[in-house]
Length: 284
Image (cartoon, rainbow, N blue to C red; front, top):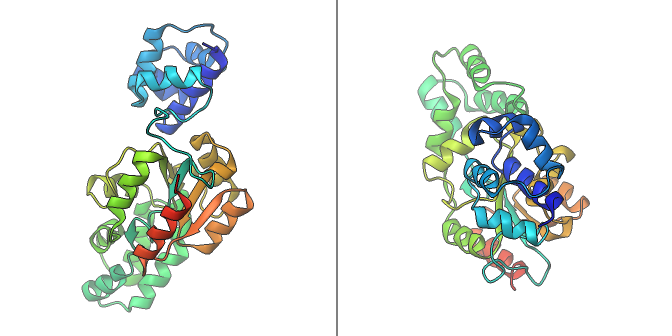
């Protein structure tokens, strides 16, 4: 077994789990120096027990790490189940708002009904600050305080309005299940802190095992900025042309296309047609 390849795979598993080296050390009971050496391939044949602890801490099957180490950075799932499409795709990233769920504009009508404020005031306030919230540079508490001040309300909770207004995209669950069966899949979303976790817990996002979750508020960058795509490509462990982004926003798709990714524009008003188009791209 090549120790450098194993080190890269263990590092990838850690990053896909959203853990820093320090956090993984705490969960796996390792010293920082040991983990750092393993990840850079400086320890020849690490103990299988050490690898097992890392696998457990990152939620990665041990056999996937060992098999992948033996085969380079190939997809961790067995070749008999995971595919490469005729177009070359082996990893699919899905946007959330406008792809996995219908968008949340009804929230502004609810705010108007509850507060008496004009809907355009609430909507303009949200969009004026949404990028900062999705980058993680503005907290939800700070956003809520702006709503309280400008709409003359108390105890405003944007997340509550958002969660009540979104709903799963029709036919999306079956499609995501199919994709996850044959491909590695991930989420790539501009989102406020904690929203993805809450949406998954509430069953609003299809319940599959995502190989990578790229949350803008954790990355500190939003689509269509380069940084978030660079992180996403690293977590996919794939070449640009092997990644398909399914998104409903043209600027986000254009940025991915310029980096060499394959892209599909999703029409949330015609999800059936978009899903059918995606399956054509993903035919194997």
